Image 1 (cartoon, rainbow, N blue to C red):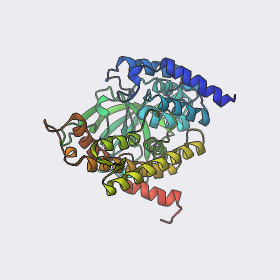
Image 2: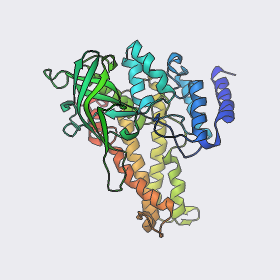
Image 3: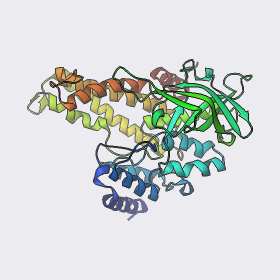
Image 4: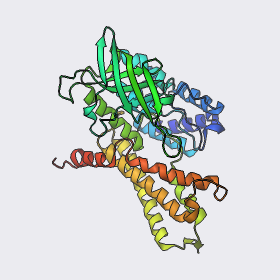
Length: 394
């Protein structure tokens, strides 16, 4: 028996013995926030996986990982999916700032931050966009002025997802206003538990929202928590975005994988609402769309697997933009298909005429519209694909 076969057998046995029932199927997934109470099985699953290094399986052992090879990582994900286990830990800690620190952080920064991130100790928010700097991110105006051993931050960030429950935030700030706009930016880590940081929820029409506005009024950040060097934030910030897109694309190899994808369940959900004739969908147009959707899903998963196998260490490339975009469009098409099959059952927001599953399907359909905005808009991804993947001229 080969070494990889041994690893698969050992992994299968360990998961069967250690993955609690409450960590399988749909349900709560921790992202590190100290403000969210974890369910019993969820906490147990996190503790067991963190002890084994499988919350961040490809990270070095000294920082809480297991140093799995790409092949071992693929086997672990296969076995997690086989038992429908949820990932034990997700979020911007293990998926965005953690990999960025591994690649660009100093030895001291790695030692201070990474072990806690791997154990899920602290949830992270992302401070990039501003009211006057969205897609033109380099126009940001949030200032950071060095005073002794700290930077003093003043400014405002918007669309900071989950900031109301976050413990820390990584922030792009302007550290030198006299340099060209791309050259005077730094990426700094900030503790949100201080008087100088205020979070204001941005309410959507539904009445709730994960989005927030985050204000910095003389907030403090340690001078030695600038990542990748002062005034090098544009380079560091772009690299972090590649890790973000790889997560959206399903090719992240830091740990936020596992469980069954919603797209794989979509056909069986659709079949609840359609008429079958001799085992086939009676609606020929819907049948063709569903077949095309399933074929695209297979192609998407094969492409994800190929890219993971081709990746060096934990480093995603520009192909992450292509997979992120195609995955977002595929997910949106799945929800469009489901609502088409549901008919009038798919247009309810609430009330006695609709089941919980039906109103949730409607709300999910609306939420999926954000997939081609979050993590980089569709147009931004197309520009990256054109320039960096296809090599087209500007």
